[in-house]
Amino acid sequence: MACLPCFKDWISCGNDEILVTGTLTANTAYIWRLENKGAKYSGDVTTDANGNFTILVSELPNGLLNPYAGIFELTVVADDAYQCTSSTWNDSAYCDSYDCINFEVVNGTAVKNTLGCPCELL
Image 1 (cartoon, rainbow, N blue to C red):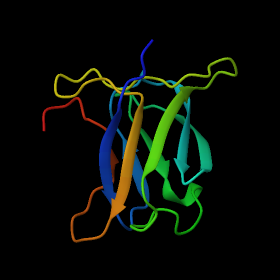
Image 2 (image 1 turned 30 degrees about the vertical axis):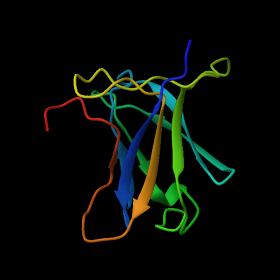
Image 3 (image 1 turned 180 degrees about the vertical axis):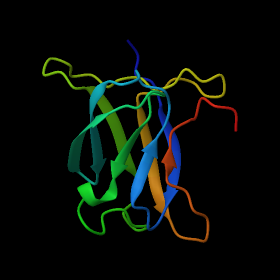
Image 4 (image 1 turned 180 degrees about the horizontal axis):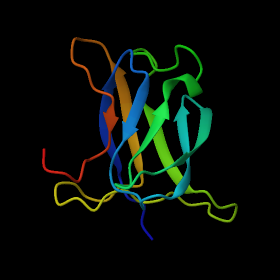
């Protein structure tokens, strides 16, 4: 299977949580993995009825999500000891499927705490 491209996105500074959209399997346990400059972070999460989940910024080191940190890569794997490959996001008519999200944190007055290509109409 060929690797799918990463979805490119951004969030603003100062968020308390990050909503990750893109329609994973609803009400399912996953492990999210976040990588930045070789450092790796992870956490457990269960998707909601829409297949979305939230990462609490308090689960990450203080100050990690800043505009000078560069590109972050977020992947999600099934919460299964034998599952080693990334889960694929998205059934959207607006975006191709992807197996990771590359994002950066930006300064400015815009407020955005959502990552991923939403399946709902915008």
